[in-house]
Length: 123
Image 1: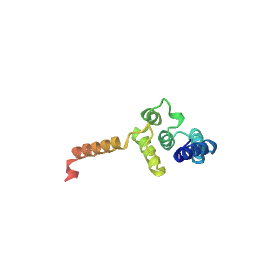
Image 2: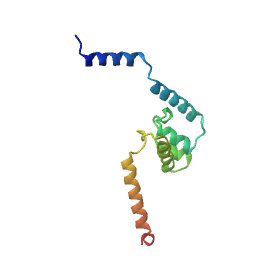
Image 3: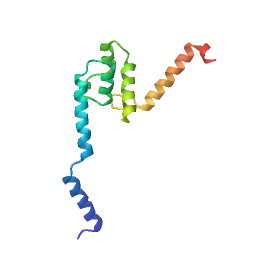
Image 4: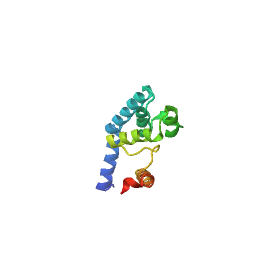
């Protein structure tokens, strides 16, 4: 004989198995559309920023620095576009991107370097 909690758990499993997961299905459809839109866009920092931010399949085997070199721009430009896209959409950084902690460390390091190179501006 099943307990009330076991019956509830079994019912929840049955409902989960028989009901479509609409939010997940919508997300998957959205990503499919987004990936297609990215593929057909001309090469630009924005295209690659969104592609890396969403782990688009066109990024497999590529590095941000390689794409930046092909476009004749710095890696930071594509990285900035990826970070901006994530901030605007509320997405976390993708595996292609540096973590928030790494970005904060790099920013602080860069600021310290600028201060050391321009001591008159810091006083």
